[in-house]
Amino acid sequence: MLDSLERRFGRYAIRGIIGYIVFFQCIVFAVMLANQEYVSNLTLVPLQEMNGEWWRLLSFMIVPRASSPIMFFFSVMIMLFFMHRIEGAFGAFRMNLFVLLFMVTQWVAAAFMRPSMESLMSGGSPILLTPMPNLFSDNLLFVFAVMEPAVTIMLFGIVPLTVRIIAYISAGLLLLQVVRTPALWLSVLVGLVPFFCFALPQFIKNVRQRATVGSRRTRFKANSLTVVDSFHACKVCGRTDATDPELDFRITEDGVEYCVEHLPKQ
Image 1: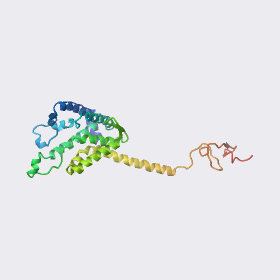
Image 2: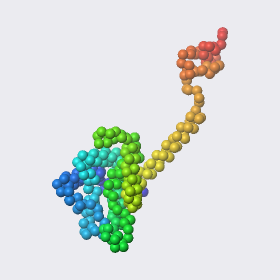
Image 3: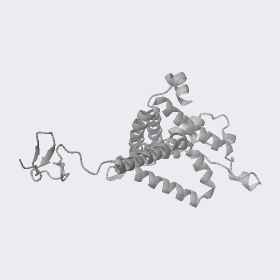
Protein backbone atom coordinates (compact mmCIF):
# COMPACT_ATOMS: atom_id res chain seq x y z
CA MET A 1 0.00 0.00 0.00
CA LEU A 2 2.81 2.41 0.86
CA ASP A 3 4.54 1.64 -2.43
CA SER A 4 1.34 2.42 -4.33
CA LEU A 5 0.87 5.69 -2.41
CA GLU A 6 4.48 6.64 -3.02
CA ARG A 7 4.13 6.12 -6.77
CA ARG A 8 1.08 8.42 -6.81
CA PHE A 9 2.04 11.09 -4.29
CA GLY A 10 5.77 10.69 -3.82
CA ARG A 11 6.54 13.77 -5.91
CA TYR A 12 4.79 15.93 -3.32
CA ALA A 13 6.99 14.72 -0.45
CA ILE A 14 9.14 17.33 1.30
CA ARG A 15 12.76 16.22 1.29
CA GLY A 16 14.54 16.83 4.57
CA ILE A 17 11.28 17.61 6.36
CA ILE A 18 12.87 17.26 9.79
CA GLY A 19 15.52 19.75 8.72
CA TYR A 20 12.76 22.31 8.17
CA ILE A 21 11.29 21.49 11.58
CA VAL A 22 14.69 22.01 13.18
CA PHE A 23 15.17 25.28 11.27
CA PHE A 24 11.94 26.73 12.64
CA GLN A 25 12.76 25.40 16.10
CA CYS A 26 15.95 27.45 15.98
CA ILE A 27 13.93 30.55 15.13
CA VAL A 28 11.45 29.91 17.94
CA PHE A 29 14.29 29.24 20.38
CA ALA A 30 15.89 32.58 19.49
CA VAL A 31 12.56 34.32 20.08
CA MET A 32 12.14 32.48 23.39
CA LEU A 33 15.43 33.90 24.64
CA ALA A 34 13.89 37.35 24.34
CA ASN A 35 10.30 36.50 25.24
CA GLN A 36 9.68 33.27 27.15
CA GLU A 37 5.91 33.70 27.01
CA TYR A 38 5.88 33.60 23.21
CA VAL A 39 5.96 29.80 23.12
CA SER A 40 2.54 29.64 24.81
CA ASN A 41 1.03 30.80 21.51
CA LEU A 42 2.41 27.75 19.68
CA THR A 43 1.77 24.81 21.98
CA LEU A 44 -0.97 22.27 21.36
CA VAL A 45 -4.01 22.74 23.60
CA PRO A 46 -7.29 20.78 23.83
CA LEU A 47 -9.34 21.22 20.68
CA GLN A 48 -12.13 22.65 22.82
CA GLU A 49 -9.84 25.56 23.71
CA MET A 50 -8.54 26.34 20.22
CA ASN A 51 -10.84 29.34 19.74
CA GLY A 52 -9.83 29.65 16.11
CA GLU A 53 -6.10 29.26 16.79
CA TRP A 54 -5.81 26.32 14.41
CA TRP A 55 -2.16 27.03 13.65
CA ARG A 56 -1.45 25.23 16.92
CA LEU A 57 -2.16 21.96 15.09
CA LEU A 58 1.13 22.52 13.24
CA SER A 59 3.12 24.95 15.35
CA PHE A 60 3.55 22.56 18.29
CA MET A 61 6.08 20.66 16.16
CA ILE A 62 8.47 23.62 16.12
CA VAL A 63 8.42 24.28 19.86
CA PRO A 64 11.92 23.49 21.24
CA ARG A 65 12.01 20.82 23.94
CA ALA A 66 15.22 22.14 25.53
CA SER A 67 15.48 25.34 27.52
CA SER A 68 19.25 25.81 27.70
CA PRO A 69 21.30 26.69 24.58
CA ILE A 70 23.71 23.80 25.12
CA MET A 71 20.99 21.17 25.43
CA PHE A 72 19.16 22.66 22.46
CA PHE A 73 22.34 22.53 20.35
CA PHE A 74 22.93 18.85 21.08
CA SER A 75 19.27 17.96 20.52
CA VAL A 76 19.35 19.69 17.12
CA MET A 77 22.53 17.91 16.07
CA ILE A 78 21.17 14.51 17.08
CA MET A 79 17.84 15.11 15.30
CA LEU A 80 19.64 16.09 12.08
CA PHE A 81 21.88 13.03 12.36
CA PHE A 82 18.86 10.77 12.78
CA MET A 83 17.05 12.52 9.94
CA HIS A 84 19.75 11.87 7.34
CA ARG A 85 20.14 8.20 8.25
CA ILE A 86 16.41 7.43 8.61
CA GLU A 87 15.33 9.34 5.53
CA GLY A 88 18.11 7.63 3.59
CA ALA A 89 16.57 4.29 4.55
CA PHE A 90 12.86 5.22 4.39
CA GLY A 91 12.87 7.71 1.58
CA ALA A 92 11.36 11.20 1.68
CA PHE A 93 7.77 10.02 1.21
CA ARG A 94 7.81 7.59 4.13
CA MET A 95 9.60 10.16 6.26
CA ASN A 96 6.78 12.61 5.56
CA LEU A 97 4.22 9.96 6.52
CA PHE A 98 6.17 9.29 9.72
CA VAL A 99 5.98 12.97 10.72
CA LEU A 100 2.33 13.24 9.67
CA LEU A 101 1.38 10.13 11.64
CA PHE A 102 2.96 11.54 14.79
CA MET A 103 1.08 14.81 14.31
CA VAL A 104 -2.17 12.88 13.94
CA THR A 105 -1.51 11.03 17.21
CA GLN A 106 -1.12 14.36 18.99
CA TRP A 107 -4.28 15.73 17.38
CA VAL A 108 -6.16 12.70 18.68
CA ALA A 109 -4.72 13.30 22.14
CA ALA A 110 -5.77 16.95 21.98
CA ALA A 111 -9.28 15.91 20.94
CA PHE A 112 -9.72 13.67 24.00
CA MET A 113 -8.00 16.00 26.45
CA ARG A 114 -10.34 17.86 28.77
CA PRO A 115 -10.21 21.67 28.60
CA SER A 116 -9.24 22.18 32.23
CA MET A 117 -9.05 20.56 35.64
CA GLU A 118 -12.18 22.43 36.66
CA SER A 119 -14.19 20.14 34.39
CA LEU A 120 -13.06 17.18 36.47
CA MET A 121 -14.01 18.92 39.69
CA SER A 122 -17.46 19.58 38.28
CA GLY A 123 -18.06 15.95 37.44
CA GLY A 124 -16.70 15.86 33.88
CA SER A 125 -15.19 12.78 32.31
CA PRO A 126 -11.59 11.95 33.24
CA ILE A 127 -8.68 12.82 30.95
CA LEU A 128 -8.12 9.95 28.55
CA LEU A 129 -5.19 11.37 26.61
CA THR A 130 -2.82 14.29 26.75
CA PRO A 131 -0.52 15.54 23.97
CA MET A 132 3.14 14.60 24.43
CA PRO A 133 5.08 16.36 21.63
CA ASN A 134 8.39 15.40 23.24
CA LEU A 135 7.77 11.82 22.09
CA PHE A 136 8.71 12.81 18.54
CA SER A 137 12.42 12.68 19.33
CA ASP A 138 11.88 9.37 21.15
CA ASN A 139 10.22 7.94 18.03
CA LEU A 140 13.22 8.98 15.94
CA LEU A 141 15.62 7.48 18.47
CA PHE A 142 13.77 4.15 18.69
CA VAL A 143 13.48 3.86 14.91
CA PHE A 144 17.18 4.56 14.48
CA ALA A 145 18.02 2.06 17.24
CA VAL A 146 16.19 -0.65 15.29
CA MET A 147 17.95 0.29 12.04
CA GLU A 148 21.51 0.78 13.31
CA PRO A 149 21.78 -0.23 16.98
CA ALA A 150 25.58 -0.46 17.00
CA VAL A 151 26.26 3.15 15.92
CA THR A 152 28.17 5.07 18.58
CA ILE A 153 27.19 8.63 19.47
CA MET A 154 29.26 10.97 21.60
CA LEU A 155 26.64 12.03 24.12
CA PHE A 156 27.15 15.72 24.93
CA GLY A 157 30.34 15.41 22.89
CA ILE A 158 32.01 13.50 25.74
CA VAL A 159 30.42 10.14 26.58
CA PRO A 160 30.51 7.47 23.83
CA LEU A 161 27.33 5.39 23.85
CA THR A 162 25.79 3.11 21.28
CA VAL A 163 22.35 4.02 20.00
CA ARG A 164 21.02 0.80 21.51
CA ILE A 165 22.07 1.88 25.00
CA ILE A 166 20.67 5.38 24.54
CA ALA A 167 17.36 3.88 23.39
CA TYR A 168 17.24 1.61 26.46
CA ILE A 169 17.87 4.60 28.72
CA SER A 170 15.17 6.64 26.99
CA ALA A 171 12.69 3.76 27.19
CA GLY A 172 13.50 3.35 30.88
CA LEU A 173 12.82 7.02 31.52
CA LEU A 174 9.49 6.76 29.71
CA LEU A 175 8.57 3.71 31.77
CA LEU A 176 9.52 5.54 34.96
CA GLN A 177 7.33 8.47 33.91
CA VAL A 178 4.39 6.12 33.37
CA VAL A 179 4.98 4.44 36.74
CA ARG A 180 4.95 7.80 38.46
CA THR A 181 1.91 8.99 36.50
CA PRO A 182 -0.13 5.92 35.46
CA ALA A 183 -2.69 8.11 33.65
CA LEU A 184 -0.05 8.75 30.96
CA TRP A 185 0.33 5.14 29.80
CA LEU A 186 -2.23 5.48 26.99
CA SER A 187 -0.81 8.83 25.89
CA VAL A 188 2.66 7.28 25.64
CA LEU A 189 1.36 4.33 23.61
CA VAL A 190 -0.50 6.62 21.24
CA GLY A 191 2.53 8.88 20.89
CA LEU A 192 4.71 5.89 19.93
CA VAL A 193 2.37 4.73 17.14
CA PRO A 194 4.82 5.94 14.41
CA PHE A 195 7.52 3.73 15.88
CA PHE A 196 5.17 0.75 16.06
CA CYS A 197 4.07 1.25 12.45
CA PHE A 198 7.43 1.98 10.83
CA ALA A 199 10.10 0.27 12.93
CA LEU A 200 8.43 -2.59 14.78
CA PRO A 201 7.76 -4.61 11.59
CA GLN A 202 11.39 -4.10 10.60
CA PHE A 203 12.50 -5.21 14.06
CA ILE A 204 10.43 -8.40 13.81
CA LYS A 205 11.83 -9.01 10.33
CA ASN A 206 15.40 -8.60 11.60
CA VAL A 207 14.78 -11.05 14.46
CA ARG A 208 13.33 -13.64 12.09
CA GLN A 209 16.18 -13.11 9.65
CA ARG A 210 18.80 -13.58 12.37
CA ALA A 211 17.03 -16.75 13.51
CA THR A 212 16.95 -18.07 9.93
CA VAL A 213 20.61 -17.27 9.35
CA GLY A 214 21.54 -18.90 12.65
CA SER A 215 19.68 -22.11 11.80
CA ARG A 216 21.24 -22.20 8.35
CA ARG A 217 24.70 -21.73 9.82
CA THR A 218 24.06 -24.54 12.30
CA ARG A 219 22.90 -26.90 9.55
CA PHE A 220 25.89 -25.95 7.41
CA LYS A 221 28.34 -26.70 10.20
CA ALA A 222 26.61 -30.00 10.94
CA ASN A 223 26.72 -31.09 7.31
CA SER A 224 30.16 -29.73 6.46
CA LEU A 225 33.25 -31.93 6.29
CA THR A 226 35.40 -32.14 9.37
CA VAL A 227 38.54 -32.07 7.25
CA VAL A 228 39.58 -28.64 6.11
CA ASP A 229 39.77 -28.22 2.35
CA SER A 230 43.27 -29.01 1.17
CA PHE A 231 45.32 -29.41 -1.95
CA HIS A 232 47.15 -32.61 -1.00
CA ALA A 233 45.88 -35.67 0.88
CA CYS A 234 47.51 -39.02 1.64
CA LYS A 235 45.49 -42.01 0.56
CA VAL A 236 46.78 -44.15 3.43
CA CYS A 237 46.72 -41.96 6.56
CA GLY A 238 44.39 -39.23 5.34
CA ARG A 239 46.68 -36.41 6.46
CA THR A 240 46.58 -33.27 4.33
CA ASP A 241 48.72 -30.21 3.76
CA ALA A 242 46.16 -28.32 5.86
CA THR A 243 46.40 -30.59 8.89
CA ASP A 244 50.15 -31.10 8.57
CA PRO A 245 51.74 -28.19 6.62
CA GLU A 246 55.30 -29.56 7.04
CA LEU A 247 54.48 -32.91 5.44
CA ASP A 248 55.68 -33.68 1.89
CA PHE A 249 53.48 -35.44 -0.63
CA ARG A 250 54.21 -37.44 -3.78
CA ILE A 251 52.05 -38.64 -6.66
CA THR A 252 52.73 -42.06 -8.13
CA GLU A 253 52.54 -42.99 -11.78
CA ASP A 254 48.99 -44.28 -11.37
CA GLY A 255 47.88 -40.81 -10.10
CA VAL A 256 47.47 -41.74 -6.43
CA GLU A 257 48.84 -39.29 -3.84
CA TYR A 258 50.78 -40.39 -0.73
CA CYS A 259 52.71 -38.69 2.03
CA VAL A 260 56.42 -39.44 2.12
CA GLU A 261 55.92 -41.74 5.09
CA HIS A 262 53.49 -44.00 3.23
CA LEU A 263 54.92 -43.70 -0.25
CA PRO A 264 55.03 -47.25 -1.79
CA LYS A 265 58.52 -48.65 -2.12
CA GLN A 266 59.70 -49.34 -5.64
